[in-house]
Amino acid sequence: MIFFKFKPHIFLLFFCAIATCNAQTFLCVSDKATGFKNNKGTWVETHFTANDKFILKWQNSYWNWTPMGSSIGSMCNAKNEDVFSCDMIFTHLIFNKRLMRFAYTSPGGYALEALQGDTPYMVIGKCSPI
Image 1 (cartoon, rainbow, N blue to C red):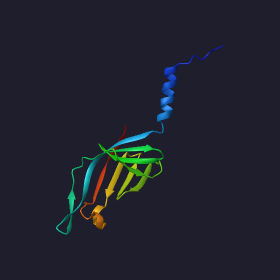
Image 2: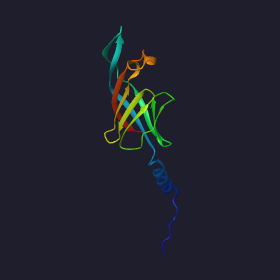
Image 3: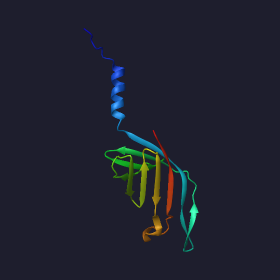
Image 4: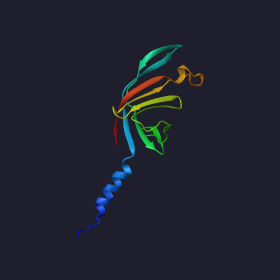
């Protein structure tokens, strides 16, 4: 008769694999950024330095989009699907898990009087699992 000898390290590896299979966290880095700025009452195209980094994390049945270095993120009520899109406070995010790409937009002050000083912009970039 063969007896199975309990091996704690194998059990721990198996348990960790199960526990993290649904944990999804991505580091998203901007590649390009463009937008518009108000130049004395006239909106003109402008380009920005693409140096933004974000953490995209699935937690508690929603996605959390947080600028790197910030403790406050935006909750995204999209489903955990391969491609999703969501509206957050005055911003919009599209993420594709298969391509590992994102597009993030902020229409800002162009359409909203309360945010007249804001510059509308769009950032695109790539993500990698962390």
